[in-house]
Length: 626
Image 1 (cartoon, rainbow, N blue to C red):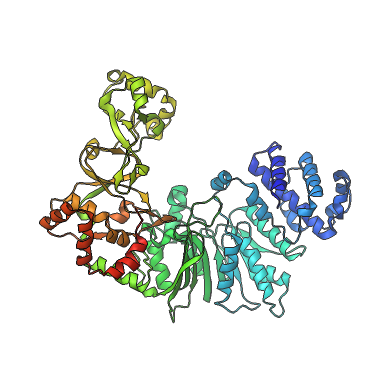
Image 2: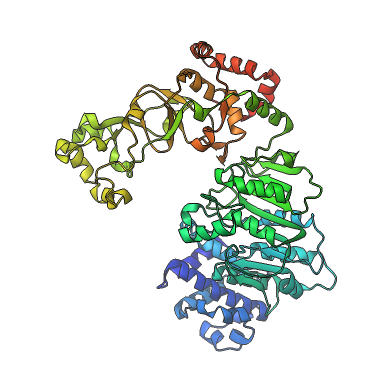
């Protein structure tokens, strides 16, 4: 729809005496009803004045059952209806009844903030088309075939599947038969079901249809709809923090094969779908790509490998395709026919969403600890480094997180503020964040942390207390203060002071490259920075930091790391702790450290028998240019 047209609709909603989302639902209900009326009678009905139109037979003659079923959405706001009627009347040139999609209108009327609060992520149509076309290429469809979207939302997958089945021209199958016998949907949101049903109503041009779309919870409610040939969709990505304890307990009990501890509820959709998939059936999901590496997805990875043939895996490799959502997806196509497993067709996308790497990969090589999918020459090099490396990082040091202040605005100060308030000097600590660590150096910008936990009594530090008092209300509202765990002026999680004052290796938790820095200057750091200390006697920290910054280790780490953005990787302890390094004798460590970066590269090439060709053709592709 035209942007100015959408802005006018949004303004009508804002002028109503309801909250915005409630108004959006009502407006879409009314507009769907009116445009459906136009589809049945023609746009001539918009020639009337609104009051005259309401008094005609046009207003109710062809009212579909769906509008009476969902009449609870009708707020009977006469002013809004009249404004919408007039708006449609003056913008009829933008309307095409066959292409009108209420779900798409709903998506366009919601702001990014509202989509986030509702947890709604919409799959681009071009990806839906590709997913369904590819799924249909693996299976023969006839009039007895059945398709399910288990989290159908606005009905995008259902509507596109209707179009694709219709294009097959199956004998004895018309539009009504497809909608009433071949296409099924489930969603927990009743309004989403309204959108799905009306979307297919417009796509088909039919009147009353007995849709097979149900308002239930797919993974917890009991139902019997039989089995399906194709199950496809975009399961919700809901982490453990966003689920209630009772709901998680139910999932632990129902899905122990894939769900535990901090698993994502989307994993349960795979297991439930496996249970109701016909023999030789196809499952196609677009889901967060993080299941390939996430710690608590190991059960899911094992389940998929053991119970399915993975036909295709399209990895967006840290890039996002969703509007207003930072999730990087993967599209996986599975068959429960495991009799003759073939190689996975793997596609890796670059930042421009164009395929830049396509190859086949042996499914038997997938490991539950994490899916490392590489070309043969890359995998051989990775496995060689893995085999020769002799020590886990967790065995030679301890990795910890930086400080959580609870309100950086209060506790982080510059030199001008320090001088203005004469803040007590012994409380001040040099402060850095993720962004200060670049190219293995610290770009310090003269900020300081008020380490207020060292205040024994408020009277002892009157200047710092006076300064912090301007933020007192916000500080007191922090969870730990409200629970009585912290004084109002304390840091939220101060960590151990000596950990920062003593030498340590610090690094950003997300970065495009390996940026490890051996800090001997007592920098205190924020929660987006991690650090390693507690080094074992057999380890020279200078050797370790040189090793971690080497191009060979960068290649080795990135092959198995979680990718969270375009060329951005996650350096969390749960991954770093469990990767390996090569630890030589202490005297060799010292010699290498003394000679610097060139020495470590030469040394590791010899240790792992890496050729110059492998450096140029493989390793350099993974290394962030400094």
